Image (cartoon, rainbow, N blue to C red; front, side, top):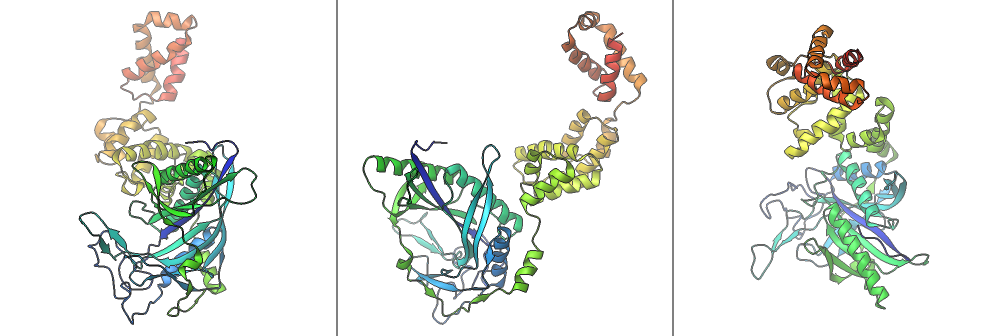
Length: 483
């Protein structure tokens, strides 16, 4: 990560376009399924045909309010849709229906975690409802472009931050936190590759202590955390180089090229008056009553920060483990189901879910929702660790077999004869045999070479085919070696 030269600071604000997971578009009944054949999900309303009137999707309103409440924002009792005028081939009406002066959500915030554990509050200026534009398609066309209007009219909330961000790392932390929240809430699928969650980065630089912001550029439609970081770092470096060489920064819209890691100018940046905003005469104001807002607030799920704190408090987990296990709502639910069904220690469950299971799923390129081992099945194995039927070492073999679909933990333990040896007389017999076969190592150990203890543990485990109870083995081995 590049460092900002001494004496300079960046001022960054992000505009995040979050596609709402409704069943239909914001102003029509057209579907919004991703990947449909071009122009098969566009109604006369989406096409801007004469005489077609928009009808507001109430589910989009509910999801916008849900988001606002989750970030401590105010919900406008009355918000208004406006027409934002500009020409683009994939905008059939010649204007986009959005919100301008009276957005539905305003004055919220998000607390992000910085390196070292410190937190920083990033203000959220507003989150307004709007429709998405269509898509220009260039691949497969020689001297022209295709227009796919399936996306036209897809419901969005545009989440606009305050210019409180100072580094690319802070920008990524903010985006990841925002992404986690909208997915937790179930208002967005968060799929960045499909454009469901994308970002415009506004970047300017100034001398440290300067009273005014510098001239900003806007890098449009960046759809990965890594690309956002690279685009911001490049813009900071580019702008400082221009200013130090005596040049000026133009207010413009830029595009990021992931192949080169550079941004390039696309067009001069418009100001609000260029869009000729005015209230849409075809749509009534959106009125959110106190009762409506209270009902949505009562239905909010437990959010990541609250869940993380509860996992630390109720399960005695480290903050690191709690953070890992609450990284997604589905993973947190899986973990809690394992704890409830197994009766095993919460820390033991956390180790198996966060380390063994997630490690295996990562190798398989699967999400927790696709896990070959259900929460109940993993709980069944952890029960056998807790009641000492199997040791942690034998559990590794059971886990691999479960991952390969060989059956339940009990079936695998029985089929492979993996029951742990807890009979101390059998363990002592194995230890005595190892001691008898290794007299020199015994003498060395007793003369002070304590590190040889691991050698004896390994030999005794080998003699019992890994089935000896580790605690009993270690205790009895120390006793026998002490003579």
